[in-house]
Amino acid sequence: MKNISNGLCLDTVARSRLVAIIVAATGTFATERTVDADGLVRCWGTNLYGQQWDVPTDLGNCISVAGGRYFTVAVKSNGEVRSWGSYPTTGVPSDLGPCLSVATGLYHAVVIRSDGFVRCWGENNHGECDAPADLGTCMSIAAGNGHSVAVRSDGIVRCWGDNYQGACDPPPQLGHCSKVASGQYFNIALRSDGFIGAWGENNQGQCDAPADLGTCMNIAAGNAHSVAVRSDGSVRCWGSNGQGQCNTPSDLGPCSSVGGAVFNTIALKIDGTVRVWGYQSDGQFAVPADIRKCSFVGAAERRLLAIEICPSCRADLNSDCRVDGADLGILLNQWEPCPASTTGCTGDINADGVVNGADLGILLYAWGPCTN
Image (tube, rainbow, N blue to C red):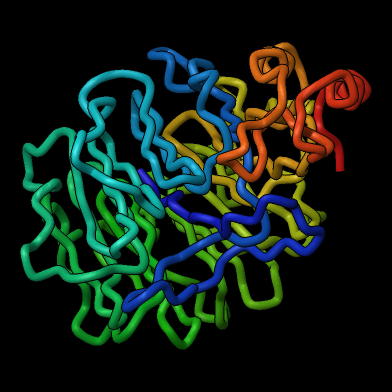
C-alpha cells in the first residue's frame, strides 16, 4: 500500500491558493499537512467490501484519508478517526484520541496523534502494529503490506514489521527526511535536501530513482512503482509499468500531489483538478463528474481517493458542503431565540440572536451544493 496520509489546515473558508505539502510545526514536532481547506472525502473504483461507496453519511469534513485492501480510514477536522469497509481495521481504538494524519497498509492502519505520537491497529502478524517504544514524536508515516514506517520529528526514519526484501532497513546514508511513502515491500523517502532515497524490494526498478530527477517536493508509491513531484511541479514515475502506470501524460502540467495504486497513478494539478493514468479495471478513470477542486489525492490498491475542497456556505449547518433537508432539520429544531448563555446557535444564520423566518429564507435561497 502507499502513504496517502496528508492532513490539511483547519480553515473554515476555502482560499483560492492551493499548496499541497508543507512541514508545519505543531508544538514540539512537525507533521505533513495539506493546506487551505478541509473538505469531503471522495472515492471511486472497486467497492467489493463497501470501502468506497459506503462513506458514512455523517462523516463531514476531513483532513486526511487512506485506504487499505478492504477498508478506508479518515481523520475528521476535529481529529476524530472514522473507518469503514471490512475487518480488521474498522475497529478504531476507543482510546485513540484526536489525530492529524493516517496511513494504511494491506490490513493495518497507522496514525499520527495530535501529540505527535504514533498508534497502529489491525492485523499484526509481522509486528507491523508494534511501534517502537522509543519512537518519539513523528511528522510523516507510511505503511506497506506488512510493515510500517515513520519519519521522526528529527528527520530520522524508523521502520518496523515485516522485513521482507529489506523493507525495514533504511540505508545508513539516507540522512534526514521530511516525508516517506511505502509500496508493497519497499519505501521511498523525501530527504530534507529534496532528493529521493529508497530501499526494499527492487525487482521492478521501483527503488531506482532517475539520475536526472533532481529535487522534489512530494512523493508516493504504488505496489511496485514510485512517483515524485519535482520542484518545478512536473511528475516523474519509475518502476513497474506493465499497465502504463508510469506513462505520465505529456499534457499533465504542474502538479502538487500524487498517489500510487496497484496499476494506477493519480495526480492533483495545481489548479485543484485530478488526473489518472494506468489501467482501467474497476472504474479508476471515472473521476466523479461533480467533483470540485481538491486539496489531496491518494490511492488504495484498485481505488482512488481525494479530499474535495468544501467552500464555506453560511446555510450549510452540518458542514457537508451542501444545503439540504439535513440543514433544514437543524434550523427548525432551533426555532426560537438562541439561549442567553451562548454567543449564538447553529441555526442563526444571520446572527441576529434568533432562529426564525429570516434564517429560513437564507437557507432556502442557498438550497443545493455550496459553490465557490
